[in-house]
Length: 533
Image 1 (tube, one colour):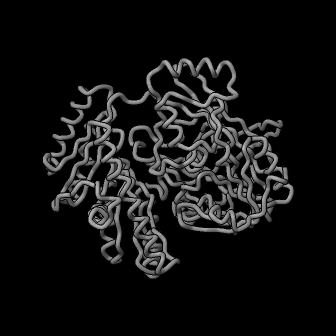
Image 2 (cartoon, helix red, strand yellow):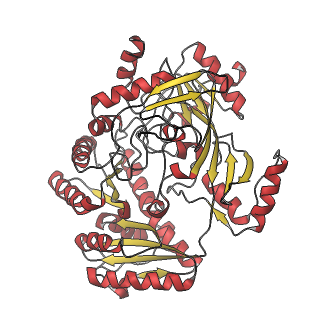
Image 3 (tube, rainbow, N blue to C red):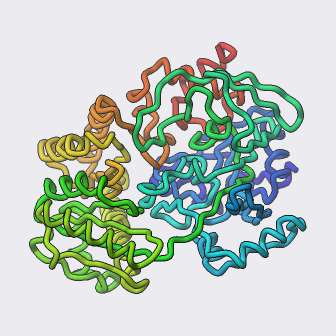
């Protein structure tokens, strides 16, 4: 098995970084293609106490896949579809390896064609039923569709449609997790539960773990910050969102859903941010079939205007009225056109009440029109990344600074006011977009030089503290990784980080997996030296 562990030479340079633009170092790398290979690699590295960073497609924005020395275990070549079944409610449950890419899964589901090589008879019978049933889809939708399912589970990814469907967690019904020593946990939702904050787990090799879970309380808002813990929780939920620090996901079982029959997109423009916030607050209790409620602020729309003028690649973007200062996009997932029409009527009533304009609203009822809206929405982050890459040619030390914080519904106006006030005081350039329906905006600071970059980091630290005081989360969907480890301590406190690190060391005694993710290596090493105490 050691033959599959290769020295980390220049040919693997790209695997030292992810979409966060952060980079790291490693001494070796592997590309396993099966669960058994993962287990053998881990067993070999465990004997030598080599740090291990787990990677998938490296689309993460929190540097969770960026190595801090040691070995890179990249699961992108584990991309087989393993089987299919139906549960008692008739829902289709699909087993896949962690390297299956979201965009490929979507294509397979839309065509009703899945790769069935090696499937058992029961799976093949379920597949026949799948082909005869209404179209199925997987609702978790991070902006980057080239993400792989293992990575999405590792950070509990979500995306625009999480307003209706929630994050990745509730759509995962089974996991295989290889531990640091190569032993295996086989977890099925509904089978193993904590007793209060104590959790017993038995591995495939018969080893029993008695785990003490941290006692912090998670905020009641969209949240991908730290280990998921709750009284009497399902064991599987501990490993979803763990940022590769507790084990390596080698298999997932995901729940599919019937695709909505009618999907309409509505882009609503306003001449002020206050009106957009009021519109969102008023809209949430009125709509029953909103899958997504998204936002683009003035900075984001101005970037799109410039791109449309300056780049032929963006020439197909629709022209924006000068009065359009901000935009709220609503996606409606409905059973039929009558239901969608009724929802649109309710939306129009709230729009008028909030001070919006019917004649400045785009309604997309066809796939062609929706594709235009999709291009509009995805052009914003793409344009910002292009802008920052251009500035990095002058100063390579800067990167985009993107927030990922959320607050409870009642604090939406407060957090928007916080962002506006502090950005104005700082004089920093910014653009904000994201999931306003979940009170979760990605405020992106666009540094022009190293001084801007430093001040932006300080501002984010301030926001982390104030968002925590509002009952919010410092990471709503990107995970914590390495970039936001300090914010996690701000959110839960130092003692909670100690408890979390102790939990990790119960499963990973040498602290090998995902070093630098969630908590500092210094804290981890101190506890390792004390025997995990």
